[in-house]
Length: 192
Image (cartoon, rainbow, N blue to C red):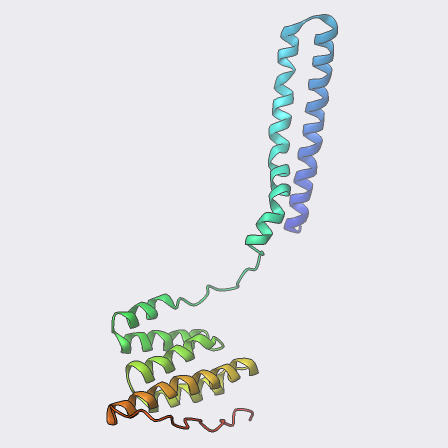
């Protein structure tokens, strides 16, 4: 049986039980008022309180549902999402090779995740100053990613990150003159 159907049947059953308890409480209270038997009136509060407790949870669930949907849309993943924080922490601590290996492991487990390729390219160029490694990661990402938008984003990010290496290399060789260079890369042929 479907989980939603089970929940709905359980809620209906609880409302029926609460309605019976409210009816008993009403009958006991009515008899207590007309007969002048106030202890019976106090006893009638028991079923009333129990019925209120039984329906409080479904009413609270229904009332909180719109707010809950606002903060948690119910999207569930079939497997855990990649943990980028571990390699990011290693990079911040200066362990660039370990960070690169961490992102490479994530790229192996989640090949369609764009962030791992961008981070590996960034580490290779900015931290390790290894353009060949960045090129191989770039071509691996282009060959692996299925989404055209992700490929376009990877090309743009690769160009932007590569330009940082070009600027740094030029500044190292010519510290007093930093010329504006044409650092445009040719568009890779990733529409095979």
